Amino acid sequence: MKLDRMRFLLCTLLLVGALRANAQFVTGSTTDPRAGLKAGIFDAATASKGMMLLATRPRADTIMALAKLAGPRSLSYINSDFVFRGNYLYQGNFGGFQIWDISNPASPVRVSTTLCTTDQGDPSIWGNLLFISDENTRGRMDCSSAGITDRISKDRAQGIRIFDVSDPAHPRQVTVVQTCRGTHTHTLVPDPKDKNIVYIWGQGSSGERPQEEVAGCRGTPFDPKTDGADSTEQFRRIEVIKVPLDHPENWSLVNRPHIFEGIGPRPPAHGNAPGDTLGRGGRGGGRGNVGAPPAGAPPAAQPAGAPPAAPGGRGGRAAGGPSQCHDITVYPELNLAAGACASYGILMDITDPTHPKTLQAVTDSNFALWHSATFSNDGSKLLFSDEWGGGTSPRCRDIDPVNWGGDVVFDLKNKHLTQGAFYKMPAAQTVTENCVAHNGGLVPVPGRDILVQGWYQGGISIVDFSDAKHPFEIAYFDRGPIHPDTMYVGGSWGAYYYNGHVFSSEIYRGLDIFNLTPTDNLTQNEIDAAALVHFEQLNPQTQPKIVWPAGFPIVKAYLDQVIRGTELPAKRTTAIAASIAKAEGLTGAKRRNALNSLAAQLTRDAAKAKDRKRVTAMAAAVTDLAKATK
Image (cartoon, rainbow, N blue to C red):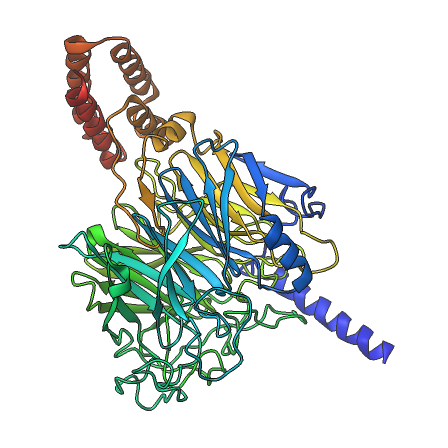
């Protein structure tokens, strides 16, 4: 027995060693400052670059107490996603939600805690209405903890809970949108013509509820032979719910679009890491992936509809293709949406938000679970993330390929996607740290496409994906594992930039708030330019158009980028910097004339620059500043 185990371990080590010897097989770095950090709940060692922890707050005492009773492996009371409105942050939890006053980001104050079992409690906000996803079959209409065991119950709530949060200290549930499969996540889409109407796109992953409980549902197994042709079947569809903001209780189901129409069976996808003996997929993904490419193989992009190389497993529904999206991000300004739909990434036209139309489906055998998506601000790129392992498994170890469990960037032109490169948080993590790509959003630095992203216990990574073929990390923050020997699900569920700061929902520990600090790839002027952008509310999956106000930090940020890229001679950039400084010291007409003169010079410089587009953007920023000068 011992001899057999020794032989097995030796063969595993030889296999991993051989794979690492292959120059194409790249894994996380063990020399990165984030590798091997000391474990601890609130005293773990940290490593950071370009990020300073400004404040951290634990979960509410009531939630922490319930979490301890549930045990270290339970997901019942972990923090999930969050959204913003004004000076408030709304943080979801599998067992309810918390509201934080962030008017002073250095000292956030918990305003209220609402207990309500939902699994997983993803939120969105519009005005005074907070929408919470709910797919827990035990959840009750009254949010009580009594639970439900009956197959059919009038007390079951499964879909979208809507709360009135006009008084943040006393949230009040006003209605429950009952859906056929609950909602694992949802996306809020404003009506383009009526400001009093929003649509909720529900993405549920539970089984269908019986029609005796919710009219229009069947409660029957998924039939891949129908491929969604049966309009009463809830698989391979999303639910579009219309909500009048003044009377949310009058919500109505307006469509169940079959967005997967024409998309073929599940494509091949990789399984466990080579040499991995742990490798069971976690909750939400990583199940039934087969047909893995050999180690070191190049990205295996698959056309939509291509037949699989081998039959898919339970999670993939090989015969019928994807059955649901995990996340859908909409960009109303461009009338586009991106669905991360398990085995496919889907680009959609949402000119009519009640009838989204699929434009293209992409896939890649390096991806196990297409989980979420983010557009670049100008809509020229689209980034998808892969939640290999479902978020509860260690997928950033030094045996895990960097093309698995990360991001892939696409160029987007004329409503068509062309695949670029992969990106993964580069530091090797331990076997007790659940780590894989998860939720993030844009950092509004003008002239660049920058994403801040949570990686569970891989921490936070900030990546520049301006060039779809060469994304690279510019900043990070990471803690050691929660426990040195036991896997606790924790880390950053998602990280978002909001009105000058980075906020992270720490699954086990609570809430983190950061300042950005300069690095060799991020200047103070760029940080100051980003801080000029303010939103009244932010739902990351309802992606807003970023518009920069006129300001000297914008101009200086562009100049820093021109200098970094050596796009103009040093003598010329020195002269430009002097002109900007001189104009900043002037007022009124004198400043306006100086700025107009500089803009004209920059327009001439653009013709000679290596990156004409960037210098032209700087000239436009100078012109805007001149126009804004009184």
